[in-house]
Length: 94
Image 1: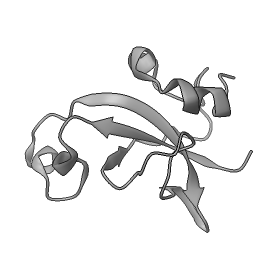
Image 2 (image 1 turned 45 degrees about the horizontal axis):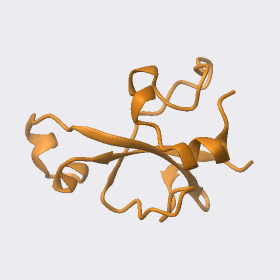
Image 3 (image 1 turned 30 degrees about the vertical axis):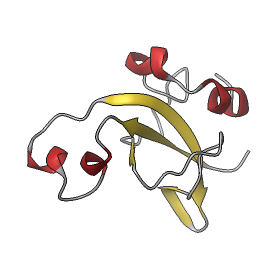
C-alpha cells in the first residue's frame, strides 16, 4: 500500500482549518477517524478523499507519529471507538 495519512472528521468543520476555533485554544471534538492516501509528492499530507470516499477538506490531519515509534494500529488507541470501519478494512490493523 502507498503512504497514508490519518485524518479526523470533526464536529465543527471550521475548527479543522488554520484560524478556526481550535487555533484559538478551543477543543476539537473528533467524530470519526479516517485514513487517506497521501497527496502525490507530499508525505503526511492527506489527499482529497479518504479510503472510504469522504472529502478530506473539512477534516483535520492527525499528528504524525515519529517514524521509530509506530503504534500497534494506524490510529491512536484513544479513538478506537470512532474508527471508520471502511477505512479500517482497507488499511488493516497491523
